[in-house]
Amino acid sequence: MGTFGPVATTGQPGAARIARPPVVWASVGLAVYVLAMLGGEVFDLNADDHTTAAAHDPPVQALHLPEIGVGLLGAAVAVLAASRALSGPPAGTDRYALGLGVAAVVSVIISWAGWPTIFGAAAIGLALTQPRRLGSVSGLSVAAIGHGSATWPQQTRSSP
Image (cartoon, rainbow, N blue to C red; front, side, top):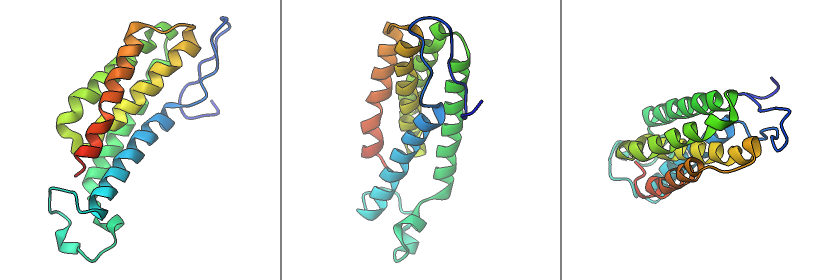
């Protein structure tokens, strides 16, 4: 494979090559999470005080590395789930997308980890591939997009 993750290629009409691998979707979610954390440090919006001891350090050094590590773990889980969905039959993609969307909503309780935005971005990206792979959109894909997009404002409200 030339890209990271599977690429859908079938001989059926309407099926197209997936242009964006799951790594891109998870990376977008992780980038939003890191930017929200950085914005919280720069504008002093964070509720916790794990960085107050280093008040004169640059904001990038003030980011809490365990939180970034947990975010990277969430990105790896999202990439594995989306890769598995894309390597299977096109009709099952919507179920994986909905699963990632539900995981995004459920992970709001640990929003400091960044998983809502990471899983939400992967759910949206995966759901948007179904029309290219199958030629139609299912209700599960629409629900996955709704679940995934509902979690995006949550991260900006509750950065660490």
